[in-house]
Length: 379
Image (tube, rainbow, N blue to C red; front, top):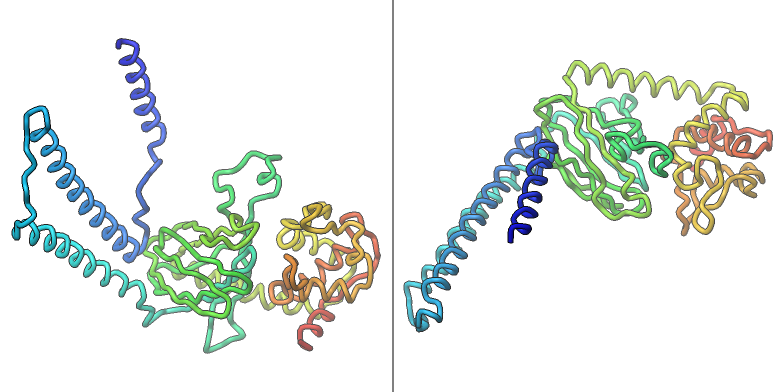
């Protein structure tokens, strides 16, 4: 008996010490940083406490009856079969509770679906396995900002060659940047399979379905970094589709937007520039690591039986036009995606040139960005 008490005391002490050491470890859902997220949190807590009260009442009566009217005291079962009062009580009380909770939930859902009077619109498109963000500007389409956001965690961390950092699998190369205090409308769709865009702190979780456009919205109250993930089983690298939202002040957002517009203008100018093989290989190295290395591996060795190697590949060392077509259009029926609408002409030319002159290949030829632009214009 004494040994059991000591063991129980040790377990309790371990739990208390563990709780103190894990002060940030929370079981509950986050309150979030938007009015809607806090409304959802309030609804969640309301239903939670209603369930707790019902549980205490029901189990309290049950355990009291079991103890008070136990067989050892000679208790005899009572008959409530014809009790109209009891029938009315256990029908009306749950009905009132469900109606009250339903009314509260209906108002919350109505708020979540009201996308009217948005200050700006962002189109979110899911790809295997990255997100595309397009800041829609109906007044001046040339000023739209459009870019991809991909996982930034290195393959060395994923394959346990390096220690995992604090935001392992929750970091991206380009976050979605939004201004605080502005109503942002999201239009969500997908290019291949069903994805789901979910950021708990914003209380936004919406499916992105090919051929359909779903809507959601948010007004972020506080600047900060808010993380989420794809919550749809969308394929092999489903767990590698993080979402990062950077909420900034309006002035910071305007400055960032102007920078992205200038960046887009410079990329457009690069399309008409004459490039050398070395320049394209250098640029293509980064593009390859971001867009291709997940499947074909950083060194081009591929994954036997799943993704072909590029080192010595007949595509990467053969006819250059076929190589361009494969990268641009993908391979229907395989995991090879079409990158024609995912990468700029400069990046497409760079990655094809890189694959033909790196990763153990040394074909010596190159693709000019203007060739990719002409191919795109002819589609």
